[in-house]
Image: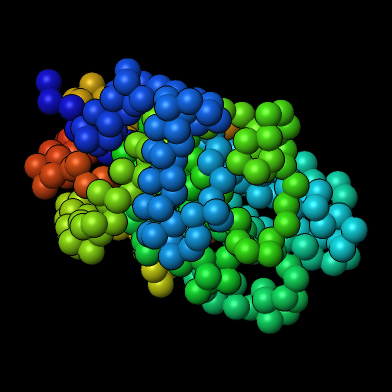
Length: 362
Ligand code: PLP
């Protein structure tokens, strides 16, 4: 059976070039970048090369990048690190109701201390459940107008690799990115920390990365993440155009099914790759497994928060109620998908829905 993978917001397949590069680093250039001998210097060079690529994409200095183990760690380092560094200036932090748990749970952790002055505002770039894009530049400008000392954190885990994000232009102080969402490895990410933005580390030890994040760097993962980012940004406009075409084709096909709707369609800006589809009368989990039987992989709600699939802050926030919260699947595309994938997946959904509706109602 042919596999049609449409869960790219949960994670992506590694680019073959990236897997090859990582393999070379694991087998040949496996030195510790902190070692003083040749093997260490070789590994250190890989890090320098990766930083040059990633910094070039963001138009920032390589020294502004701190490598982490994932998007979650980048979000934690940004929020806890800022809250600890600025606790004398204020204890007020702001976020939105549509954030990922990596931000929300972290905000809750520091929320106990919330009081007057706002030290940090955290807003996601692209929502992982419905694909809406927040007006980051406008929010950044508004935050700084109000209080130039307030730090602006952006979770760009779903937006990096799809959108051109320029931290300086958008007045972003802290930007979180994850490798496995951009066709690189799981277990690697980075945090951009703007010039003049002081945050405290949350990991202590050998003092790597100027003490900001102790722990031996994941050189293979980092080099792979930079290569995947370069591949994506080299053909970004063309790929986004094709993704939008596939997204719109999928939407036009599935909305021919009676009584279904797409969430987030009213947003001024939508990601090219995320589609949130509500099918009243069919539980998301049932549809997900029925599609799986046909080789089509999608997600119910947000796959990276599956421990509490019933708690979709985003879907509730946009007004979905009752059963509709549980009738929603997410389809997320990548540059590896084809028109055939989209047509076959839409046909599978169209075939299954009437059957599952009968089945659910009896
Ligand atoms: N932030 C957002 C918006 C996400 O979608 C995710 C994962 O899906 C994360 C953070 C967490 O990233 P990671 O899985 O690399 O920890």
